Image (cartoon, rainbow, N blue to C red):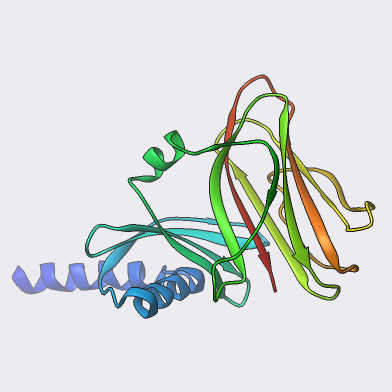
Length: 197
């Protein structure tokens, strides 16, 4: 009976290990390199064509958000306070214009924010012609749209629903604007990942 139970638990453990994605593995490797932490668990993985957001917890209980672009290449890795639900409840309210800056050694950033009804926020990002821009927005309920504007004011991407990620090569150098709009009647909490390859 003991041998059969051991065999069953071994078989069940095998597929679970195989189910860890390349993106999650890249985040685990980045966390080990950054903090030397060993052990932990993957809490959540939200993927799209442009990138993947991986939430993970190390053996000490510290939770992290990791954004991975295709490759897989880790764009950002940062510790977050509390559970995902707590992070959403305390997400900052944004509006107006905000300049995007990446942490040293990273090529992207991710944040969870709240956009009030009938408002917008514009993220300004300096980038060069030929670089690839990745934008991934995930709403936690409620509809939001976004558009991307070239440095000369022309449209790089027209108004698009937030569930459609963007990945494309830039044709101009300078400040690009990612304008996110909430035309609804309720505040919307959303995750936004922005990166440059």
